[in-house]
Length: 227
Image (cartoon, rainbow, N blue to C red; front, side, top):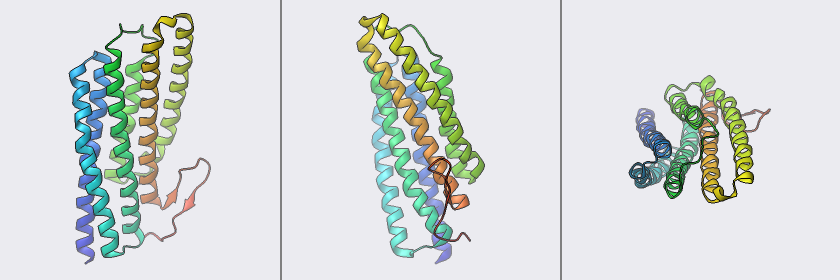
């Protein structure tokens, strides 16, 4: 029975990583659609979301079935709890990619705004966070998972600066309000992707160390002993 459960957990991780890989590609394409003003690429991102939704439902059902059938404890229970939460975070990340793609399409209706922020640099940071969150899951790397929280602080700071700069531009150029709103929403979606990558890192840390680090400055030991 234990061997069967281990096999099922490996299959579950494979599904999670498949879903994460699709979401990672969606993020890459969504960002490229913005930078290159590519409507076709943006549409492909939107269409890819259906696959992620299907996988989310399959993974959730699989986790619930395994919990009900095997009544796992210790590490196996932590893994299934983590998988349910990571599954939800990946699905939300994919939704944000769709939102970015939609903002990309909206921006095609207006002339390109004069660059006022190094968007490629910011998006590179966020894409790196998503990649490392998935790598931390694969390798059960608690340190890498924890580092994502610090990197998310940099994303938050960049987001706040971008908002200030954009508001300053719109105050002096009110004719850009419509496209400015789309850009502002785009920034917000990117910032949320960083949050979701950090959330995945927190769940991986919980899996490996048995501690909750979700709330800054506190750690809560898992209620089940690790084996």
